[in-house]
Amino acid sequence: MSALSHKIDFAIIFSVKHANPNGDPLNGNRPRTDYDGFGEVTDVCLKRKIRDRLQTAGKAIFVQSDEKKTDGMTSLQNRAYAEPPIGLGKEAFNAKKTNKDATAKQACDHWFDVRAFGQVFAFGKEADAAGVSIAIRGPVTVQSAFSVEPVSITSTQITKSVSGEGDGTKKGSDTMGMKHRVDEAIYVVYGAMTPQLADKTGFSDDDAETIKAILPKLFEGDESSARPAGSMAVKKVIWWQHNSKAGQYSSAKVHSSLAVNTDGSYVLKSLDGLVPKEIDGF
Image (cartoon, rainbow, N blue to C red; front, side, top):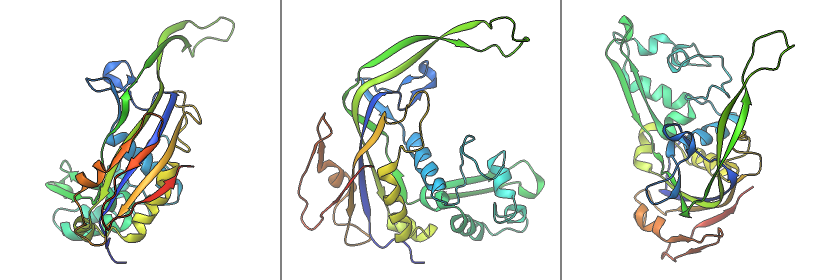
């Protein structure tokens, strides 16, 4: 399978209504905001959702969440060391025998998220892996998402029953807690796919189409108490496919051609020779 043949830029416009899109554990799990009050969803959070959707679509994923892991592995190291079809086998990371480039290629061929986002395999404690560090730089980059305008956050005090002891004859003690939500906001995230790096990982045009297909349903299957079903939705995916590996324009210029309004509508500035595809959310 040939590597990515065209540079690609993309943007996702999504809405948040009465949900916490990305809580900050250092701030009482309040929705993340910058110093100016604009809402933020980190790139790590967004890549987690992309991985989950890819995993649901049947793709092999190396960095699986605890809630959605399907192979029973308790750590990334165990997953890497597991024999095929789960992992590459322990011998692949044997410092005395392994060829780092060959192991990197195996990892990229085996796991979709490794060839897309990259990964660092660092095993330094065991004798057969001492000193092994394999860094893979992925061609797919995703920025943090930011709201179009400063967000309004509502905090609600709640009580939680957490006692799991006793014979059931007495009511368990309740504790006080807080839930936070963004009342209503529009967020935008930008990303890109770089053919020069795809050449090294084997990320292909078909892989790009796979990501393109799952982006409109990025928040499906991601429901939780903080994000009830329907509270977060992709409104539009904008997909720019350049006519060459180098690209006709810089990513900065492409991304700045999109202006998003507070109601989710948007305006696209025309770029000569680069016509974006506009995809509706699910």
